[in-house]
Length: 142
Image 1 (cartoon, rainbow, N blue to C red):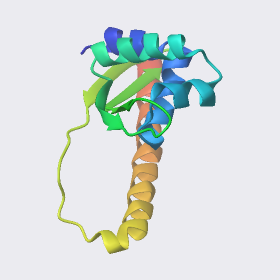
Image 2: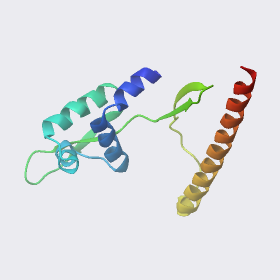
Image 3: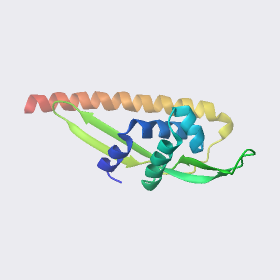
Image 4: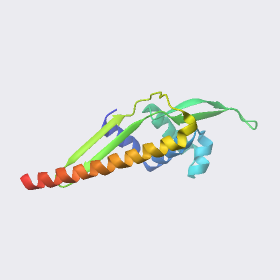
């Protein structure tokens, strides 16, 4: 998938809201419909599009005592998108985040997640500093 395809997928507010819900947990269309205050038909249309573009996948069925089994959906895509826009810089970079297994002790999951968030914040702070410096230098030499 390229940047234009990715932006086309996420440009729609409803699709973004569906993706947010699926980040939280697996869902069936009727639940999404209720939580997002949409018709089930609208949710199904967006899920079909997201499934066709490999952003979500049908991941099985949930038993329902009051009716037939419900199709469950979950997030499939793993992407990061960074856009830099200044008077001197225009960059768009999209990458697929690899699915990996790590040898970590999950009893310390909260501590590990806090450290990851801290490191990502530091990386982002440094990235912004470097972009500001790059923008300044480019403005001086152009």
